[in-house]
Image 1 (tube, helix red, strand yellow):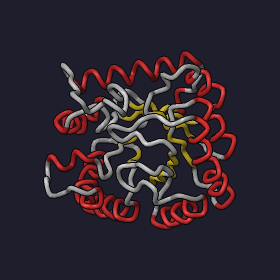
Image 2 (spheres, rainbow, N blue to C red; image 1 turned 60 degrees about the vertical axis):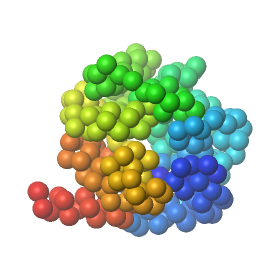
Image 3 (cartoon, helix red, strand yellow; image 1 turned 90 degrees about the horizontal axis):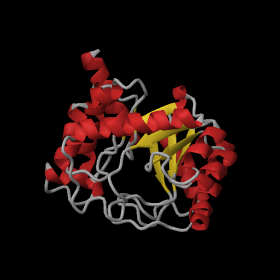
Image 4 (tube, rainbow, N blue to C red; image 1 turned 45 degrees about the horizontal axis):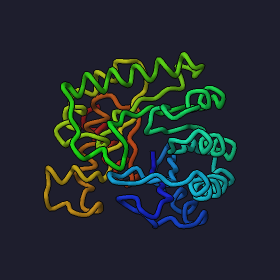
Length: 259
């Protein structure tokens, strides 16, 4: 899944895609590099990020989704917590709702059921503005797994088709580096819930805990590839990445080596 950040303040490439034309060019590049899915987001969820008005988010994402959908048939996901944005994005051509809030916003469960699209339910402790202040768990693997199971069950009760549900452990969202590593090591427990799992660890700041020299997002390619391989080996069905060509190559070579 190739990441298309349409925000001015995203931690990795904020401001790089300031127009629908720029988003389309990047989308085509990602598809040529081997992306199977495109993830479009108009509101940053980096640590410390503040929410933006719904109208501003719509202004950022809808023209880009429309431009991409007019050019390619590749599946597009809308990365948002807002039901109204998800509804408008699906009407514009998106086919998945990637929700870091796991459909907890008022009306989100009903919107997902009405839309009938695929949904990603992600775990996040707290909110982006404060989630990294002091995240704590008694047992991070058990708690994240139970949360995701509970949200999947809530979605199904609301009318979302079980086969359209994906789960995301939310690496870096209200978690320390130790929590992230524990979740990756035990990812099989989330996979065993029976839903496809997507993992997003690309260029995340917590890679610096392992390599302090990786100060900039662009310094974290090696760590991002290692995390993508670890996620795939543990059973993830999709990895959400900035560096599509490099990740596809790493996965291809790893598959050739290990079978």
